Length: 100
Image (cartoon, rainbow, N blue to C red; front, side):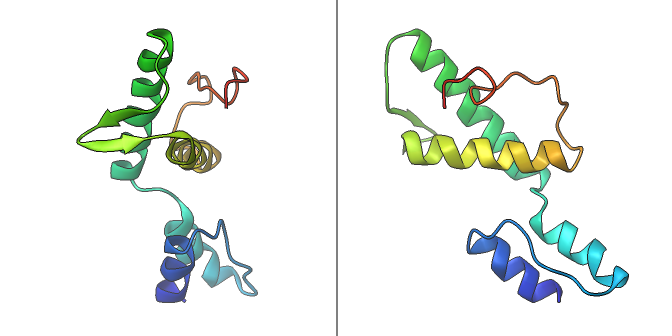
């Protein structure tokens, strides 16, 4: 169950159907972003805000190009973390502001 859930998460799935209460914990753990993923997504979104304010589109972060698909992925990570209670709900992000 754990390996299957982790594989699904890595493939981009957002969840898994469970049929027993004992499956809930492992599935939630697999599909909830860890602290490193949340930190990276937050850095991406913060850098995006700075670059948008400067009038720039795509930009580089840690030597990697960041463009709209990666911004949307970072937003999804933060959304899943927020749904799991790992990110404060009052954290302003571009999705809520209508920018993504």
